[in-house]
Length: 446
Image (cartoon, rainbow, N blue to C red):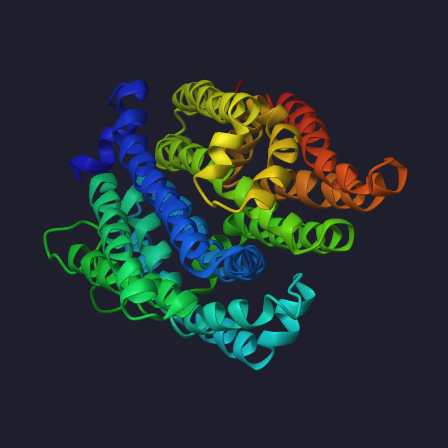
């Protein structure tokens, strides 16, 4: 009880760091794992395997998006119910998260396995990269239920007042993954299959760790009888709130698919591999911002439910400031040290040469991305699903997709049009976020 009530009484800046720092550490560890995983695959399996991983990533993100649909929405709802002191519904949210994740993950796994190769080809795989992508995604899909439950319970842990426990679960998964990767890829000569298997095993261990906390009878939010039946009100409201990050992730996946296909048309498999390297670098810092968002979410949700609106806005302003600083770091690295950053992932001279120029283009507007991400999360945190959904779709669907299809037709070098579509859409979406935020001042009590 004391862990949840502090969300409405403790100083906001201390709360933000208390909740955000474990999330940042966890998200940074996850992103560093992704970098290490990419390095192992790049050096152990070659440039084509890197291209295959880039093709498979949007498929993985789509699978994870269904987990965020349930997990993020339910965790926001949990924080709101705790702020309202409705503890019975708060516990029902926990049970509904497990049931919904099992149902959705089973559907995603079945559909994915049946149409795996056609999906990968549509996502940008070529004859040269299809085998690698198929081997990787097949293992990931079989472990999809663990991925859903892992992300869902981690979100619930943060809203239930256990940010450090959530962080520990993530770090446990990352450490096990990093240990198993070289054993499976190099020691057992399993290639990309080994990398995927290491991911599934590490998440299984993390899920067991998470379950122990929710089985503790001393916890306010825990497993017990009567919480497992799907509740229509909770389910629909959680899905409505979670629709924003879900649509954002889905839209991002389809954007990546379109970019992959455009890059394949104008630059081939090496251009796709370059995009994979750039994505991995920017992903590290975007994950830090997501960690800040995860720290802000229970604070904003609880205080919105308790009608302490000044605390909601203070958490938002602080998070925006920190997010801008984080994305400033990737701006510096991408603009001034692109070759050094690329060499982390590969020793292939051709790939390094093709990555330096686009990395500078993509990183040129990184300073404004943090604000846009935090603004979307603010509306998600306080249950304003409509505005959160709109903001999640502006950059990905309304701006980036048309630009990535149109700009190559007007650029002298078509592939530059693909690269420039990314920072241009970032700029327009940031302006849109400002407009929506100002238009919502009364409802947010600004």
